[in-house]
Length: 151
Image 1: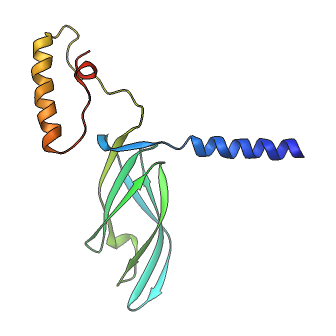
Image 2 (image 1 turned 90 degrees about the vertical axis):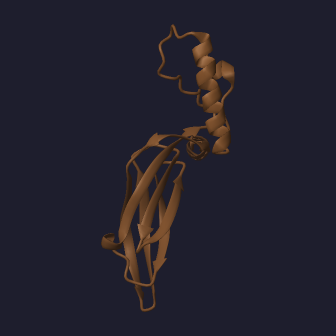
Image 3 (image 1 turned 90 degrees about the horizontal axis):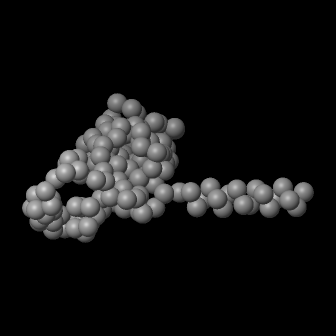
């Protein structure tokens, strides 16, 4: 019995450690977001709903959506999360619209190589790197180093 308890405790710890650490400063692509209503209720003037916000990405994504023209954002470390929504009208699938879903890098992911040919001239890569650096600075985002960008 003690062994079963220890095994369960170890499994829970491993499952919690498997949760992704995300770098929400580094968008990597797009995904598909979905909102599922689990329950809803309330009466005038206050309504609420429990929803599941999910993403087609297995981890590190952000789903942006509207509830009656009010913007909402849910940041997901895993593929889905339960949320509570509140409004002044009854909440149904009709008044929730997913606007955008963005995927982000996991902390420790190697940077993606640019889709340039392997035989690219190093000066050309350096020119592209300077443009990349300026764009990242303009957007106030972090950036990777020259050796990562131009291997």
